[in-house]
Length: 498
Image 1 (tube, rainbow, N blue to C red):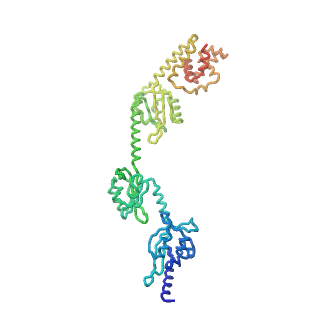
Image 2 (cartoon, rainbow, N blue to C red):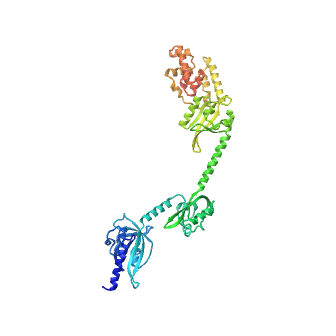
Image 3 (cartoon, helix red, strand yellow):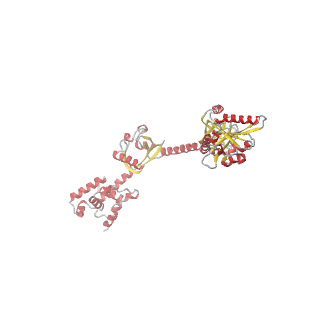
């Protein structure tokens, strides 16, 4: 064996001993592309245990392992790192995804560089592939890429070394109208996202230092020459092993429009609330504390504002019947709204007025509140009482009156009054209903007693019970009450038309 060959073999053994324990993967090739040696790290990075499983040479290696670029395009066999080093090329930082052709479920990402070892005469003696397993890094980078692209918040990343933008997400392009090539590769001097920042000097200083830029308002230039109000912030990060700055933005225009719309809505409500001639009160739903009243409320009930605002409904005590007040708010709590419920309201001077209360639940500053509208129906009530009195006079001697005329008198109020539910009618017994029906026919107690074959005292007791259950006080009121609810109308007409 010649001295040169011996020297070469000795050097190769020494080289192998040196690199065996390295964490980098190393593959040695002869000049004829034969794979002669690989360390344990290189075998592990290919998912094999013996050098023969890598393939005898570069061509067999290419059949056993499929390589793809990071953009998912296949690497042509001629461009495999092992093929390029076999041609004597030197290169560094080539990123490839490697997948065994017999096990496509397994994939590694390698960062590969080459080395050509020369002999004493400067001629190539051995070819070396050196690789790092950067699978975890690539996976993290891929997750970042997906997250960055999917993030709806507009964002760009600029490299601190030259202040050029290296990444932009769809949110930024959509917000500004720029195309990707109008951002990527351009510098912050060409597209200055901090140009109109409210604290521009601080932001620029933090950018130079690679430090966090706090949130601040800014005016961002758009692709069409216009501008948009935004909130901008900067966060330093490492990307591709380079210090960078991530700029993120919040488009203030939708919020600004929403604020204007809300303010206009509040102004319209406030104006309508203030100018409406009908008394209106707003109280919290939780504790019934009065939050606001309009001028009509103060004028109608003769209260000064300071004696109403901040007080509870119970403290003001303007609803005359406490039972009606309790029932009103219980119904409002259950159904969220009410329509024209009759209540008696007490003014500050103790004068009572009749009101129809309508109410609804509204949200004010995210808190449920009750809006109460009070319609003064005192005059209407007075008219109804006059009608009842007139009917009472008629019923004192109804024997010569046409039954049709009596029914018309009793039903006059139905023209302008809503039909009311006959809930209380169900509280009457069958006998009490018979008595009420005969009252509506115009029969006196003695006539009812004869018709039902009852003692007069028994009839009087039934009449009193009917009045008590229905909160009535006279025959006239009973007739009006029944006609309002559409009771006995057909029966009354058939009996009355004699």
